[in-house]
Length: 544
Image (cartoon, rainbow, N blue to C red):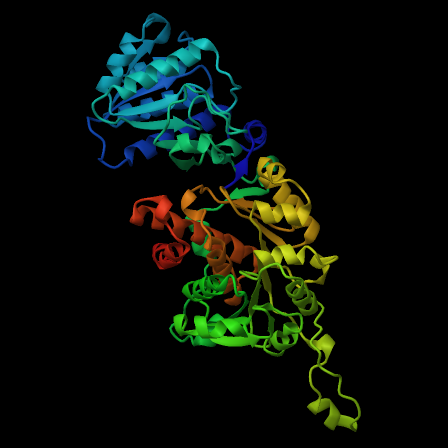
């Protein structure tokens, strides 16, 4: 799903009419048809007959609403259009609703909104087509008064009418996500062609309900449509990325995830990441941990194999790079950082690893081919597998000069805003105020895939593309949640997905597991990182 600004959508509409082969009138017809199909597919979970009241504004949203009413009337629905500042003379769309048997009510003849209150009591579906994506806040008084009256009327109804907003709930700034206080929360927002930036920002997101995309006929003949580089991740996108699980598979089919993690103060991080890598389908998971931790972790993770690293006071030591490099050959992906701590010795470990300082001596001497067959791998011959960096590993990485040039292949970096601030020198506030563009900028600068965690996680690729998750939940804001995410991503990377694919699929699955945990437990406040991990299989089952 494409993710665009209001200006981009305007240009796309114009170009579609001019060169895309679809007129403005046909775009509106397609929009109304798509909305009508959504309404006809609604579950029978709301009270009342098939009746609908639409707030119809003067712009394109109002036109979309009128087309919707006409099509629903043809399906036997009782339809009513409540017109606001819309001239009915020579309005062919209004005439269509009249001819279809619909009722037309003018807001200017309903000074105290008594008719509106009555209509709210009589209809099971409420369609908000009053104001569109082009509005600027604050609202003008007459529009604000109408929305306030409609909101009060809907709240007074004995049942809960199903509320659908066209493109955005009226009063939402579709670029910034700001909202008017009079905005009516929707159960579902039917947005045209692409998701607008403001719908995935707070507080607007809380008022949109479910977001459904309506295909209005924009094609790849439209230059600005093709040029869109921002996307929203959905279920179909992720399902298409997941590797197949052939019946003939063995554990080697699904790769080996090597996870270097943990310290004496953060033993659980390695465990969560390791189990997550297995849960997402890696064939083998090896935990490379400070040797001090092995006795406490081994009994909790029977499926893992182990690489025991030298340590200083329970944190990875600089010379541990030698041990890890000696055990890296079979790894198909490597995760660095969960629970590492911030000791200088651990920073040196990461630097030694990236520079492949393994302490092995070059073998000298020998005659002819015998020497060539028997020589050990030399320093320059060691190949690091695809890498994922998380948590303290990111902060330590940022202390290494030109770190992003030392990583041999495109890596996945998974900072939260605080870690991103340490990596970039920007303030957390600045990062949060412009997450999309900052993620894009640094993914391009560093040449690696960046997963900027938080509400509406952004995955940015080095080529400038971004992928946003339509998820914001406090259930995911818990210690250890990031360790689970990193484990999922490295598990997918181990199975052969590229850096961008593993980041997109991993972040989406992780978010959905958090939402599922919240739903099943009943309260976001009680969701633990282990609960997110526990519900990963449920999400995978739904993707099959």
